[in-house]
Amino acid sequence: MSFTHKKFAQMLNKYHYHFHPGDIVVGTIFSQEKTGYLVDIGNHTAGYLPTEEISLTEKNKYTHRLKLHDTQEFFILANNLESRQLVLSIRRLAYIRSWERLKQIKQEDIPIQAYVKGINRGGALVEIENIQGFIPNSHLLYDASKADLLYKYKSCKVLIADEQHNKLICSIRCAKISQIMEEIKVGSILDATVTEVTKFGIFFNIYNIPALLHKSELPDTELEQLEYKFPKGTIWMIKIIHLDSKQGRISVSLAS
Image (tube, rainbow, N blue to C red; front, side):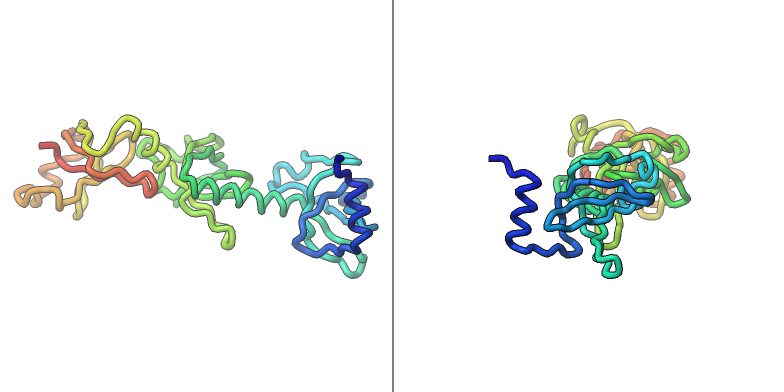
């Protein structure tokens, strides 16, 4: 026997159930008001859904129109004692479920498509599951002009999904390393171009990802005047000694 909305309301009446902020309830829209909707959530209770609580993103706030008699889930946002009415939200429910999906994606360590909505000096602003995130410069690719990333979807991995602090940090580089691990592995030998020489080692370009040859991998005879011995743009045969798709790092040594 199907469990209808009417039977649900009858059950609430029988047990005198009281709704509380934080509850998730099923309700049916029965009236459109000037700035929102009235929703029947059972137990002789009508909730109010303000227009600003319909959509999680600004761009969908006025395009996401609800219809009378629509039945769906709502989050009880507050209890307005003055009007003796519960304030409902679809937006908050979507927010909760988006974070649940993001945390699951991080746990499973799988790539996801991120929409690049802005750039700044530190990196790229992205949107995933209607939650705003950030990709630091250190997790972009060598060939990625930030301006060229704008308004495009890019494959990335979730590094940090902290709902409590509304912090979502992602990496294109980690997703790329996961992809190229199908082609190269620890022990693979290939040619790579020097992109930068630092006091702690040399960076090579491997699939547009910086790969570090740490100075500890060099013989003592090579440690002096690294910039002279390894000029930018020169190509060397290197060996992959470490691939880390979770941190976006590649380590190499010179191939013997």
